[in-house]
Length: 416
Ligand SMILES: Nc1nc2c(ncn2[C@@H]2O[C@H](COP(=O)(O)OP(=O)(O)OP(=O)(O)O)[C@@H](O)[C@H]2O)c(=O)[nH]1
Ligand SMILES: [Mg+2]
Image (cartoon, rainbow, N blue to C red):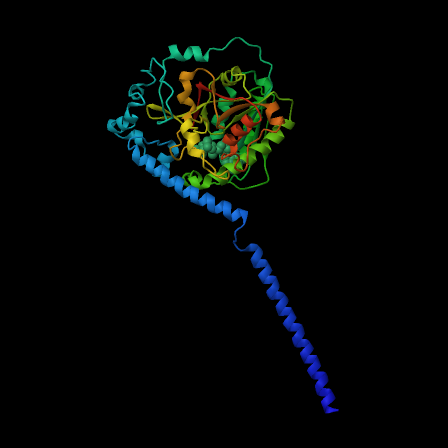
């Protein structure tokens, strides 16, 4: 009797132990399975990452070597100046001479000013070596800016993504209000997200003003219910490492705004204008339409003391040298312009070629695109597209879709 009782207890105990043993075993198997799935291993992703890392490191040392080699050839765009914390052009005149790049950028450029402009157009360089844009005499520019008489019929939608720009929107509105294109053919839509200030309120106010007081056909501001991107200190926003995330998010905002804008009317063209534009020429739209192109961009400059300098370095043309630099880059590498020597030619340096010049990359400060191109699928890549993203990615995509991409270097808009 006692023995039978013992064997029942034993069996129960053995069964319980077996049960717990299997439970633990199952747990261990699950943990191992989870770990296998999430731990780094030689996946395609990891391989691509390692390749990217190796190339990126090489690319940095390559850029450094080039910069050392050409001690005087230093492209110091506005972004790099601010990040490095110095302003080359505020120095003494010796600094200016250093910028003359072994004579390849004519020193007369530095002597030129609004009251003492150049009376010739500098020749197109092999690639851009300075961001200084000389003043040209109006005798020269006049013929590149003359417009035929025209009857305006095209309906145009102006689209502007906005974030944390409440303080500049009043000037943005003034710039739109002074456009000489018939206002009743213009509609304006602003797309806001992620702001920490009163951008949306301000955008709504200026949209009402454009409609009620300046005769625009329609205007409205929209809030997008998503967040992301890079915001905060100027240095963080413009750090090279932030550019993928920053521009991917702006591309997303542009694409969302595009969807809304195109649904609001039968438009012939989409005009992208950034909110922080300081000054637009009154005939901007007529000048861009004159190019009769699918995608057209003006020069986007900024005033730096006595100098005009290129702001939007995203409007560029590839050169044999820049193509060679990219030859061995794996497809997933993002190239961001304005951070190192890229051996491309920026739009303002292409003036000697004429009024309308072919481009491979465009910026979005002011950018006119045929609405039909957007309707046929042209948009702002939100991920790396042939090494580029956002507006530059759009230029690449437009080219692949068979659309024409040009710049009008004599037409100048100024950025803040
Ligand atoms: N909706 C939305 N718009 C944004 C965001 N970030 C920037 N923008 C807007 O997109 C346009 C271009 O952005 P900017 O920051 O001016 O880009 P940038 O001209 O290359 O750089 P900086 O002017 O030097 O800062 C502007 O109208 C911005 O207000 C964002 O996160 N969401
Ligand atoms: Mg800007």
